[in-house]
Length: 262
Image (cartoon, rainbow, N blue to C red; front, side):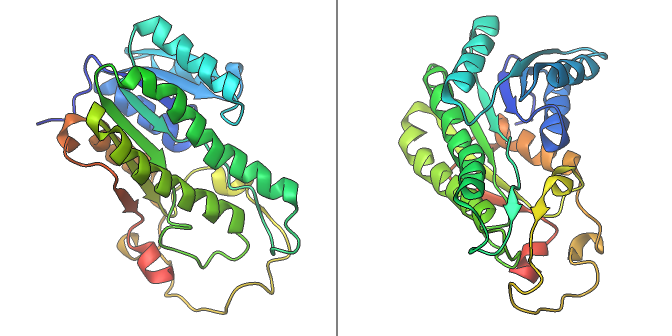
């Protein structure tokens, strides 16, 4: 049983960069039609045009996933275009502010939870009615943080949102199994994307517990970060019929990083 997605329609949030874009490109190669969703239409339109230069069908979609009306409208637009929805990759998210708990404002906390956890909920909620018609696959981008690794001091909001995503995936795997909808989570470690550059860190010098790790911190890759393309290959497997008996499962893709730093 292969990983072809021919005839399938996929939604990828955060699809214009990083893991989302690598996955969109791979899905197109495997024959899927892809709705590429990002926050601004211009960015997503440019990325979609670049992805389809060598063939494949993709449309740009814009929404703030933390605003239910926006994500619901974008999903409806996708289904109106192609008449179905088979695969949902709930990938969009932020690192947010990493700071000591007494310096983390309620607004900072809420922003991270709203985008990462609420946004994942809204994405799945408004996709499920279409997935129920024929079954399908939902994949959530969680993280090693909050699931198997807790050594990144100050990342309380981020780790909590990522732990919540895994809990949501497990709950929905049982709820949706009768409809032949599978729900799994990928938990990347250190991956070469731009998200870390957008992390705001504040006064973390005296938080956490002093630890010493071997040079590099990623055992399998001798310290090098993994790639978006490696994560995309895992997402493709979980989206395809090759994984048709896998659901409710978090899969860590981190070169054993979280085993060393947990």
